[in-house]
Amino acid sequence: MDLGGGLRGVDMGPSAIRIAGLGRSITQLGYEFLDRGNVPVARPETREPRNKSARFVGSIAHCCERLRGRVSRLLDEDIFPLVVGGDHSIACGTVAGISSWYAERNEKIGLIWFDAHADMNIPETSPSGNVHGMPLAVCLGHGEGRLVKLAGRVPMVDARNAVLIGIRDVDAGEREIIRKTGVNVFSMREIDMHGMHHVMSKAIEFATQGTAGFHLSFDLDGLDPGSAPGVGTPVTGGVTLREAHLLLEHAAASGKMLGLEMTEINPILDDSNRTAEVAVDLVLSGLGKRIV
Image 1 (cartoon, rainbow, N blue to C red):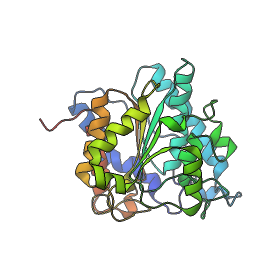
Image 2: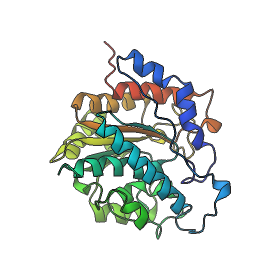
Image 3: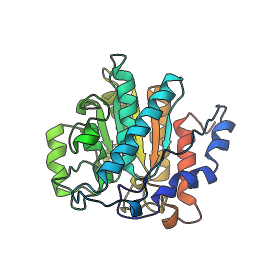
Image 4: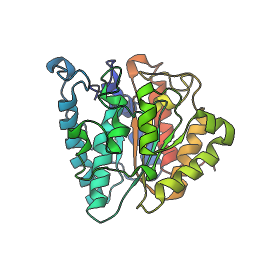
């Protein structure tokens, strides 16, 4: 999906990561890999933005509702959901699917959100109206109603069990929402000061307190652009490739990761599919690949 962003091309992210050998690499790791195909998405050129403060929100909500259903069915089959995008607005559907599935079993989920941006805008605060800057707020119960209610549980995730890691570019309106929700935040400053080991140890502690486990939503722009150039909204001074692997390795070692999501891979802006190849390597770390 590229309805949620301001640049075209990110809709080709799933194709790029397939070309980079995602299925083959996961199979070599010892897992059975099932590619369930793409969720149908409306083309931007066939739709009018209409709501300028939340562009294409109707089409985005429709797509995320379909994604929610697919994720829930995977969990019914005892299959680990790995979702690849596409702009980060897809997380509304992924988190809705996992949250609703566990809510039916009287359990809650945690959420670890890795990103250069807070993704905590609501339509009233967004400078651009791009929904890919809003999905974390949606998951915490704030924003456009059609997205907020996707899981049938509002919020999808309690703020005390949600953790935002890697931010370094926050809009003015987001700061108040961050403070209002009380979401746990580890910016690049905390990573620089304490290291990724400490940050992820605390993040997993927050995300698993009173929950069945956590979903990890990973935006490739959280990495420094030198490691992941193929993203639509790069921000300098990001996490190193080694730190990103450590983050995923901690998630795998916890045994508590309920789902994994890789977003914002834009092949048009990439260098010889390098970012998609990085994404594949990071997925493998998240699924338990070790150096020795």
